[in-house]
Amino acid sequence: MHEASKAAANGCGKIRSGIQNEAALLALLEKTGYSMVQENGQRKFGGPPPGWEGPPPPRGCEVFVGKIPRDMYEDELVPVFERAGKIYEFRLMMEFSGENRGYAFVMYTTKEDAQLAIKILNNYEIRPGKFIGVCVSLDNCRLFIGAIPKERKKEEILNEMKKVTEGVVDVIVYPNATDKTKNRGFAFVEYESHRAAAMARRRLIPGTFQLWGHTIQVDWADPEKEVDEETMQRVKVLYVRNLMISTTEDTIKAEFSKFKPGVVERVKKLRDYAFVHFFHREDAVAAMSVMNGKCIDGASIEVTLAKPVNKEGTWRQHFNGQISPSSENLLGFPHKEDGHQKSLGKPASLAVCLNGQHSPAPPEVERCTYPFFPGIKLTPVSMYSLKPSHFSSAVMHLDYFCNKNNWAPPEYYLYSTTSQDGKILLVYKVLIPSIADASQNCFMPDKLCTTVEGAKELAAQFTLLHL
Image (cartoon, rainbow, N blue to C red; front, side, top):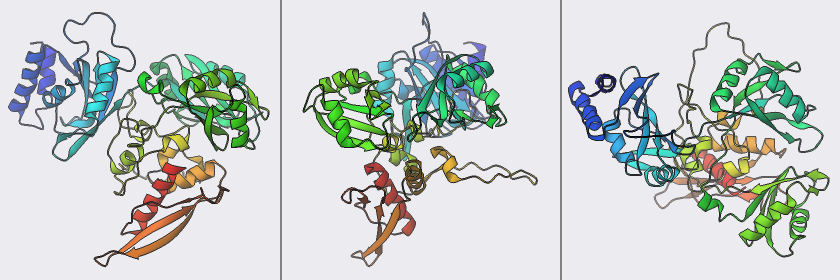
């Protein structure tokens, strides 16, 4: 057997009984014919597999695996993931101690196998009481650039970013909700590759880089949620962006019904964007083609098919630690060039990305702490200038969401009852004053809690689900 594979197999004997562990890994390599190499804090099994010819599998063939028990290794993991299909490469992130770091990347030879792995292995009980999470892994090629002067146009931002970074492909700039001649103070910069984006981020990230005299904010943009083609073929809802604040749902419905009366089922508008629901998919597709780029109340709109959200996962994962396939926007998933986990949570549309099934269990959020040395300079900051990834509770997310939509803060009203065994049970009613329709501005969950904090968190989760 290749010496590098033997050396890699030796590498985790520090935790499990050395001889037994080495024997298990060597047996796996002997059985499969794959090689194993450990480098840069990760151990690679395969890549390519024996007999592979041609380029690596295309984008979309890799899945991210989280919540792996720290004392579990390839001899146990690989057979589990082989159930979904042929593995091109399995990369287990490793500590110096010999333990794994709790997550891995599995690349399959086809997208279909990767999707099957997500379907059958997400939330899989890999050991009694230990559930792993599996979701798609994507190379992110897009950066979020904040604190851009609002008077700057797309062409100016594009030219400036090309001057200071390499590999810029495009810049995405959204008009201000109230003044369409200005931008929103941020942009998304698309690069030709993940490596180009990573190099640009490293150059810009220190926080001292300026554009037009302004210190800009730089971070990874959330990768766009990928939805399989079969699901998208059933979508009959359009996402409409760049509307005027003053544009009403009735106006939107009338405009989208002009080309074929009676095809629009309903419209849901939130600030300067809306979702237009059609009775039939073919009418939605036709309307998208006709309406994209058209003007409504003086604003040029963008129209795309809305991407469905898995309502079973997002909040349950974020507050319970249970990972679901569509929850990647709120997960602490690592980027490929990062040596540690980092939250991607910067939902482009909170009303969509914060959809999900509420869960009464308390949060289980990893908290990172850093030493506070004397002399460190502190700067006053408003919580509303932060990103959603800085908040771990639904209460804070709801407050942030209301502020970003220029709404008044949510109002909480506490109620109680007594259970059959004499316990006081609590529930909050949440009022969103900025929603004018009294029949739609109150939210109350259908479960009671024993603590004030739990009741408030549950109410906020429930409200975000139904907004």
